[in-house]
Length: 446
Image (cartoon, rainbow, N blue to C red; front, side, top):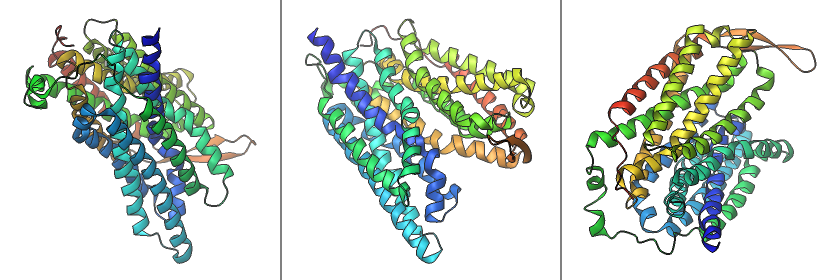
């Protein structure tokens, strides 16, 4: 009973505290326009703060993986301090930028760069170390259900958006003038407390023997070389491509929903898709525990992603969905499944790596693999935006408001449909990689 309690107190609960905090990075779309308006810059200029946050999440995980491997208490403390400091710093530069914009009528470059540094770099470091810190600990405590354990924590990262979004919207509506920077101050303090408690509770099992340097070999490259190098390259690439496809669709999700005539329920669909994202993280990883080879999960994710995307492409679902119930449902199924597969791709990476290469250097290896997230964070959204801007043309469609009046919404159906052509091709490449490059589970990996 005591060991069972320790699993939750020393692993699951602190993992949720950490991941439910840092996962709010995905709430960016809730307040990005407010930041842009308040400091006097375009939304496109401020969007780079989010891209940089995801980039530095992956790169800090890659470069600080060894720190996590050696000392989870140090890494979880770094995560708490950097994430909270980044939020508070972002709040300060929003305040400074708003003050300068009000006084001069021109946006302050210093404020914009400050937001990049705080939300992008400093918070990004907190994101990367916070994401990694509990993962190995969970797999050690739940050695018989590693997928379920990591899925639970990573689901917290995905669910954070669904939990925090309405809270943030309420704060923006009720904090009055300057509510945007006040929100960052308040949340910075709240998340520091949550993450610091997680830091204090997090601990590996007392009977875990951490391999010494000579047991681990000369370094992480020697671990990767225990299998053909193409095996690890394949894992990295299919992880990267799955994230790129997910971000490409998710970044256009709001406009696609409006395009098929569901503008009045965009918020509800966004919440449901976030739930599918979190559910995919938990469900796919728990399901993988029952399989002999965890790569089977990736094969299923890619095959189903190809099938649903192809159906929407062939039927022209995005272009023809407005007013057609069957096509509307098909587009929504695609959105929900891509969110689930996107989340499932995240939660199964550490357990796939542990099956392939063992537990000895899993934090460092997982960290290097998260560099794929960093590059996907820079390419997924931007690729989709470029496609939408280059293909098709904007058209106006009517939308009836709650009071009975009608407003016109500007959308680009051809552009969104073209994004699906590209993601379909990338999903096919991912499936080929999964079937041809990834080795079977190493039975001796522990």
